[in-house]
Length: 630
Image (cartoon, rainbow, N blue to C red):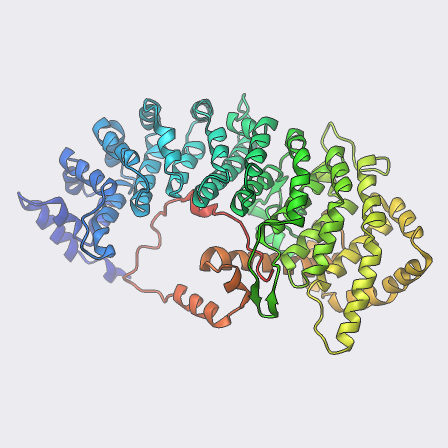
């Protein structure tokens, strides 16, 4: 590796610095100028820190380069300028943070008309983000004197780099007292309310999406910081506003005002799902999560050991959502119109759609958080008969496993809510005396006819397969729903009630159920059982988790679902498949993309130890999932 560090280019750089008329461009053309800057080459830094050079560097990253040349050459110097300004060298940081004319030139980028050049916006975001971290007091003092700062950032929120600027202000300000002061300032500027206003049918989709993602990130960052900095004497003002009933009601009013659009509904639901999150995964327990039953709270409602950081859902959030449940129910009945979709199994005349999938996710989260103490939500869902409608969709959309998972989670949340998620010091545990929970259980068996649906769907699938047809796509989830019933019938928190409800079934169904459990379900479980010899070390962790299924099935099936969900997220987020493209499952496309992304090592590549920029917007990219097949 030593041949990478020959001194020839360094000597050439020194020779250039010896010239009296050397220009900034000449130095920027040198391949090792960034490396020498990071190595704090004294002569180079003295040259770069001249007022004229610093102004030119800032001008490069805030001004559109001349047209007429190919893109890669147009942005060569702005890119190098950004790297020099953000290479975290003390003298450059001091110069930028202490010289107001430089800050004014940098700030002028925000005053340009929309739309901003996204590449220049990323350079601006990276530069000011570095200053917020390294020269915090000086930069915050400068920005707070700019009355229109927040308005300009929100004006350009359709450019994702502006999300990074806001998130830097929320997450990268130290020490805690200064952070609280900054959050108070942002709250006084009504940041949360103004972001909520952007999630409106009249706004363009990109603006809505970025506003939604910013709100989700603010909620998660604020909760994580509150857990880590418990010594803070005052609550996070932004989080307090976002969890307030007034703010949630405003979001819901926006979602359902005027003509309903899919973009507005989905982006609004993303914020609601984040507000309803109980637990987030602890990075230190990722390996445990992979071995144990895992459903990430972003995509489901169940959790296991490894989800260490717990949050209590504010009851005002549920109170704000309850009056609008009828609107979500109506979306399940009449979603935004979608064109017929060609799938690998033929033409789907009425695709499920992303809207209905997100409504199902919301219902699953509501059931999980409301199962013990928030009777108003449970009562309204029963009144609307929403679970019956979701079960109809479960069987109608035979191949949509994303929907099947959410319906399965709804059933699990009703039959056996995770005690850790529902018990707080002021709330009683789930018991048979809990009327709201009893209401949901009774509704599931008596009005939704859960047992009858399981038996009829299973028998229909057996008939189809015996005639040479394909196994129904929901059978794996149906197996686990059946196991959920059996497991909670034996030892769940409401096993007495479930036993009574099954006893009340018509004699024909009761006999068929007993035969089904003893024979068909038992045989399916036997086929699905895995060898646990290599997983015996996880047994203690497994026993403490909230499992609605037999242990051996949970390990295999839940981990399989976890892999599928992660793979799908990677497809959608990294390779950019849309609904129609994803249904093709084109192996050749995946192979080509993989080969394109996996390159051999090369000694000329950038230094692997170089510190990378933390980009909050890309890390927390919208987790919206397409409805794939349906």
